Image (cartoon, rainbow, N blue to C red; front, side):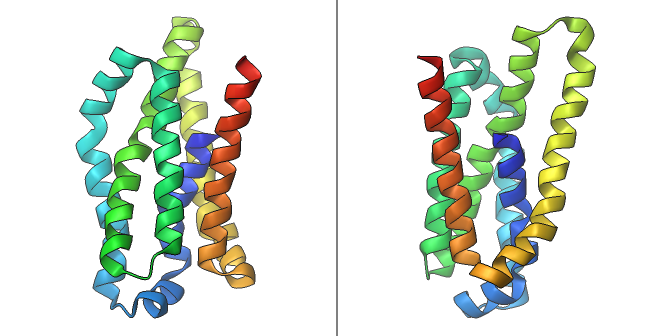
Length: 170
């Protein structure tokens, strides 16, 4: 679920280009930087995330990175500064890199080697569904409630997901 939400937020700027342009008094190049900053950080983190997940485990890595992801999403939705918005998108890339790799580690630890390929495929499919909804439903939410409120609600959804998951395990 976290990978789904993170993927949705990853692609969400494409559904709110006009609103972001107005909110930040920005040009198209500056708005496209939101996607670029996310991807730069995401790519940079792939090897370090693998090492971190191996050292500290999937649960710890996913929980901490998801909390940071939610905080950065909330900051992105709340700021009026283009620089802060770009910076938070960079941090979203850093922290979002944990969801997929952490899930793969869970698959390796919890399931047989034989089921690994199908679980990777299912995980990737869930992310792609988040991406499709991020482009579709997010556009509707932005139109109905505004981009800031929509992202704030997704941020809060991540917080509650983590809270209930941690509470359930105790």
